Length: 324
Image 1: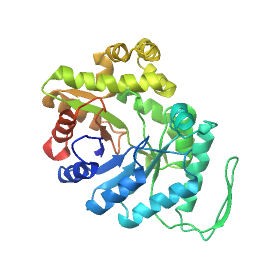
Image 2 (image 1 turned 90 degrees about the vertical axis):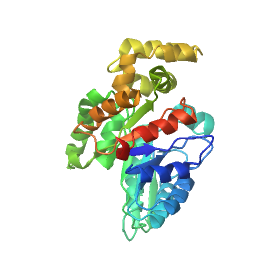
Image 3 (image 1 turned 180 degrees about the vertical axis):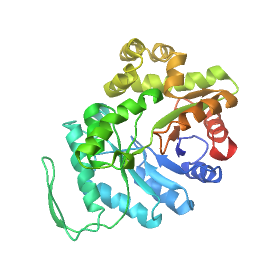
């Protein structure tokens, strides 16, 4: 099991990663939206850890060209050979348009071509020549770095792109009990391309909060789910596959600016279906049930941003592989 590194006020990500390595986590992943650069963070982590895998979860495919993404990943791989996983995603219109000032155009095609081109640049090819609808490149040699590329895909079109060109799938806010059905879209696309779907790793985010105060833990995951359902239509649709009415209520409250009501609209059943929450014993039992799912390869513990530092560290420690 991996860990998505949290953003804490009192401790640096590096110190948390060092502790995660001691506690038996297999990987640490870093996110990127605004304020910190994922590859800069991974570079520091590569020099301060010894064995733990390092991944991006995720970098978007709009704000960097495929060549820049490949160079950045290969640069980290030189510091931590064989330990790097590149997680990419289409992000959201809000992030791409309002933060990066770019048009959020044809995201699935951009995922497809970016991943194809990045993997070509990471190969040992003498010259990478690529002609697509979005990118047309020629003559530059590959970087000869073995780095798997995962895609954070929600909708079926993006899942098909994952099956066609990616090494792994990072699902989020798809109920764990329905992951098998959702993965069939990935698998079918892989077979159509002559690829073995069993070679596509599944690395879901696992939102989790642990506290002796059960209400505090549930509320942290409620806030996490409310944020995603309310701010991204793809996330709303993913949750709505199992909770259509509830997802609509959460999204409506969020759109109306009532964050508290949106969080309150997330039911206990939704929390249990989409994450892990409760006392240490309760949360451990819930997590073990998720980890027993045959489909999962590299689950990623994700403590909600709504949790304070104490709750975050308690969760990471309580659910660490060495402590369960």
